[in-house]
Length: 524
Ligand SMILES: [Zn+2]
Image (cartoon, rainbow, N blue to C red; front, side, top):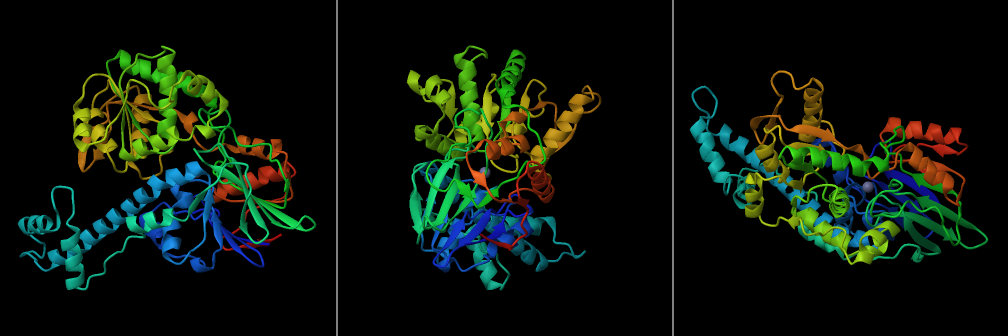
């Protein structure tokens, strides 16, 4: 049996590995590279194999960096089934069309810029620059209204002037088509995924539906087992069960563990601090009559926040101000969470389900559907909580809420997730914290939102305990407390320094660990 490491190798995104036997090729994950637009676009378009030759696929969970290129392989000849949990099937039902929509809008915007610049060059003014008036006219021609682009007119110009247009990586039609290949299976129920190959999924504790996949090949006398960790979650978090430790059935001798290492060299804040920290931030803000604005990922973080706020409200620890979930994707994903109580942990069953309550729905929660309702909410002055996407403040409705709330020192911007370099969320976090640490001396920092400048006077607070990834101690705990006998570990899914540091840690703990390179094959 051979395992080739293609993606999320010495980096975090683009998870993809190929497992081959004499008879079959099984793909583990088919994730999208994320990061700088140009590099990511180039890497995403190239597949290192012919999708038509893949027998079946195993998907660890629905996050786009694990599932995002599935529509690309189904469009290019992949005919097999995609095995994952049923919660993952349902989450992909919203996440893949959403990803396709982003691909389409990105391509449209790039094409708009190409046509705009071509038309501008055709109308040079006296100084060689296109006049403001001509430029306005060109923009009017290519746009439907202030924000919407006229795709038809733009694509006409691309053809007419033989310009180099950009095609989306895939379309919403491709995403809808891809969803037909999904096969939802329960945890701990083996399925046959190839000749003499079975796959069993176990809880990974990372996100709703996330799984560790045990793949076993061969007969009793001569068998091989590969365990694919997917992303490993934290211990003691709300909603989900902890990462599995008891792997029953055959195949407890693991020949190769493909192990993530996102935080291979880091320690997180303890999970236990999450609820009291949130309580403090909400109370302090409400006492001043302010609003709490939370930029949040639609999948996972939003539902976890709702869960903890629900608990705080039920316990009477925080005044019950209205909570608005203002993101259509987050609303849909919250429905998926509500529909999969079979994966909740015991605490969630005891606290909510046994009391006849849905953890994610309580009297104060409102899901804002229309743009009009969202606009009305931005102007709301009474204290409330808004949870809105995108998580790093790069796009989406959160931008409009920030425009209305960022200048007011009564309000709080609560950061609950990772903010990548060069994002608005990162700037708000860094500059807001620095201003706070200076004792709010001097002029407040200025941030640019949708091309306008705003003073950052709102308080910026970060709560770190929300991470969906275990830190190095939790990953080590997963490996050590499981009842598996692990012969070798291939460390993937981490920036190179994190993966190398984690492999070193594993070696000091007595494991045989390697950090493969892109395209490298291990044989077991
Ligand atoms: Zn993930």
